[in-house]
Amino acid sequence: MKNRCTAPMWVAKAGYIVMSLVFCGAGVLFIARPELSAVVISRALGAAMILFGVIKLVGYFSKDLFRLAFQYDLSFGLLLMALGALVLARPGEVLDFLFIALGIAILTDGLFKVQIAMDSRQFGISTWWLTLLLAIITGVVGALLVFRPWDSARLLTALLGASLLAEGILNLCVAVSTVKIVAHQRPDVIEVTSFEVEDP
Image 1 (tube, rainbow, N blue to C red):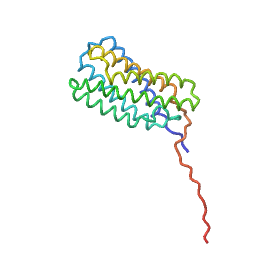
Image 2 (spheres, rainbow, N blue to C red):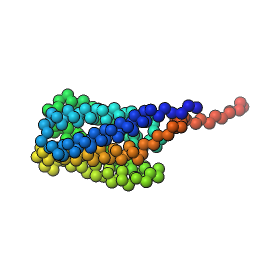
Image 3 (cartoon, rainbow, N blue to C red):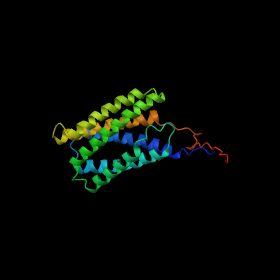
Image 4 (cartoon, one colour):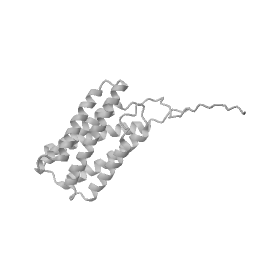
């Protein structure tokens, strides 16, 4: 039996790491420059969400060894692509919607990552506690972005930056600690036991 091709796994892991760094960079930028226009913010995030959605789909179908990081990425990847397309279609009109939708997405991802952290503990991954801590922080910041305790555009942009920074760090931690790629991984097979039935 041939070994599984690991190229999609490497693409997914590298893409996760790169996009996590992009989200971290965008988060720092929005925190440092909260006066950026709605159009700039929407276009940047729309393109990033579409690209990250594609990478999540690649990760889901790559079938890495542990299958922890990508287990929820089919629906989440499609959601990100749909949100990104909507934001790019109307970059100057959907900023309020973007805050709420992205906040819900980040909150949901934080909750999913809590489950991944607990699964990582069962797999014996020593950094499961770090994933859990980052997931909780990310979920809380995502919830703040949804409920928006203040109306100042500058503060909301800074909060968006904090959410993206937390999400980027969380995804970076998950990609590095839970995506295991081995060269000799076998394809999935279903073992079937055959029985002989004697004629009466």
